[in-house]
Length: 487
Ligand code: FRU
Image (cartoon, rainbow, N blue to C red; front, side):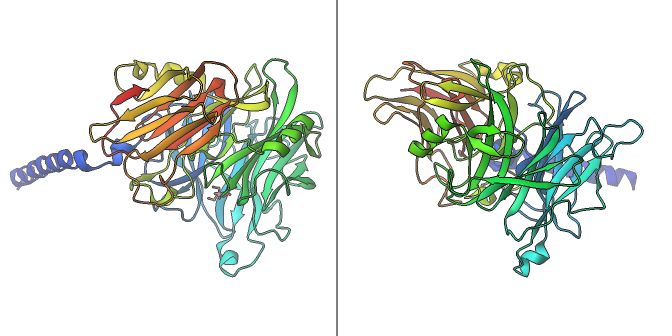
């Protein structure tokens, strides 16, 4: 009996080995899975949520449907990292309940126990998120979305929902979501920024439970191709002068610079009650209205980490590396979507005015060093340099033996960067995926164009001119890109 079982198992193992061997050559799943960008082990992911830093650990939560590879009942998945590059997925943090799905939101380290949730000297972490009620949505009611809180006394691993939820009732606005909380030092209170259809609303609180409406911003300002989502408000120091400005990020879907989802930004001042645009910025906005965190098609709903302190005052940021135009049909089945690399966001006053800058977090360079060798595996990071003459189009082409090509570069005729994924592999899964080239204006006037490229099998992130123009795009070649040519 035993012998027979072993024989049977032996045959099974051999035949399994054979099938896995066979399938890996045709199965794109793991070939497509990025090696240094976060992806959920299984199934669907969208926005990053609740990012905070505590006790040497970076926490990342995310919109997650653990039972399917398309959007569904939203949970908060969870991952942790010591270095912002290597992520370890943790058990699910928040499950949907009778009040609804758990939509996007933020989390803060409540060091002074303002919430009173702390116990036995344990620092409470408080999450604030949107409860999205599907019964109300189906019944076409308007008050579908409310804001709720939960707290954790074990550093973000397990959570208890507050019995007094919701903490902000719906004021009869259908799209009313994605709360982002920050501590406002000058007025010593919590400030919550919320997307409310076509504007953002600010609320204040002493204890994260009782919220007072303060003001709104943006109804006729910026881009309104679609609904406003996932705002973030934070101060930044201008790189050279050290002066402080307030930055407001607002995602909009659709309405991005190259169609679909994208994140715009505003620079101004927040006094604890109102956000007002910087006069110079307001003037520029009126003339060009082209201020995007990323001009590529695949960086959406990004927000910053709470409780990190960089000496230069910069913030840490991460976005969802996809676009609602096609996110649910991209050709991966086991997992769907990854996050961008973690980025350091700063502010610079250029000859052309204030600009937000993004660069990969420093850790990324050291950790990905091995693969940056110019002639080996293209995955990893590389320095780029272009010296366009008048009227010239210059750039790089990544290709494989099948003749598939991803081209990107700069066109001096139009003073624009571009990324062209129209011939970069699979695209038949969506008419909206690769039907056109993406463009971004150049901000810098430097003669030489310097950049950094991050390549990770199915994604490219381009950081041009010290991070003043950013491009993030995904693609699905039928064989890995092995050649890189400059033209
Ligand atoms: C943005 C978004 C948020 C919402 C979440 C739902 O991508 O639509 O506004 O909270 O996704 O998953």
